[in-house]
Amino acid sequence: MSHSDRASGRAELRIRSVAMLAAFALFLSTVEYLIPRPMPFVRIGLANLAVMIGLIALNTREYSLLVVLKVLGQGIIHGTLVSYVFLFSLAGTLSSALVMYLLYRTCGKRITFVGISVAGATVSNSSQLILAGVLLFGRSAWLIAPPFLIMGLVTSVLLGLFAEQFAGSSRWLADQEAPC
Amino acid sequence: MAEMKRLTLLDAGIIGITVIAVGLLAFSVYGSREGTPQVLIEASGQQWIYSIESDTVVSIPGPLGPTEVTIHQGGVHVSDSTCRNKVCESMKTISRIGQWIICLPNDVFIRIEGIETGEREVDDVAF
Picture 1 (cartoon, rainbow over the protein chains, first blue to last red):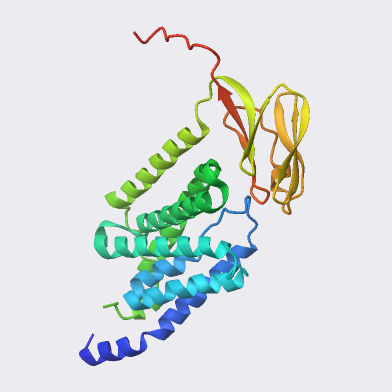
Picture 2: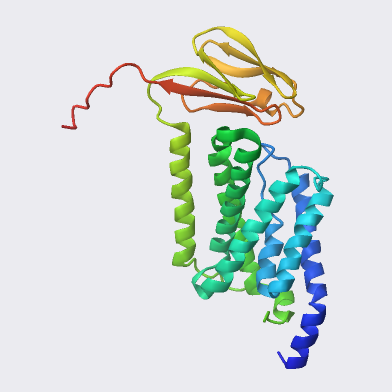
């Protein structure tokens, strides 16, 4: 990447890539919203796929913007933006986005998206459980923790496999400039 | 189609640690399966304990209203609840130690716990 590219990239961000992935995240959460859930708090975390792709395609600032857009957009779609549920969404998304970012940047080829996805889901679920324990249910929150975390483990492995496959074969991704 | 990359050691480590952590958590939360089963109900910061042999219907107050818990022939189920989703009513009757029913909207937690019955006998194998 040349100096002028970098300068203009910094000024504008690659807003189209961010918008594309944010839209993808919201599309996926809408799809997930259609799928009936066995228990109210059990989720698949489909939108996390967009965040994982953002790890490859975006730089740090763009990635942060994507994460914020995902949280806000999901709050609007699900109508939870000004309810306490939004706190859970915020805690889950921010903690998992941070952990996935750190793993992706520090571990390089020693980790695949399966590991990144599982770590992100576990951290997201744990932080939500801790929040639930503090805010709502006290000690009883731990009762629902094991099935909640196991569900997260299963779905995150599947999402990670998909992201790994996508990363290796997407032409759209290959067209994106490497993040600096 | 690109060839699938193999999982790395770090991937396996993360999955392994998660599985072990969840396993330990599950064990500590649901506890041992020994002792005499009894029904423990927690709601709105209060606790109720019933014998699982007692044939009774109890009304537990929650933030949304009463949740009716039926204990019958060694099994426990929610027979009526004021919550919206009624997930708790659709859950199966529980009867073994470690099983639970939760009504999240009405903040009612029902679980079967084992209480110690006197001194445990020393295992013949351990000495």
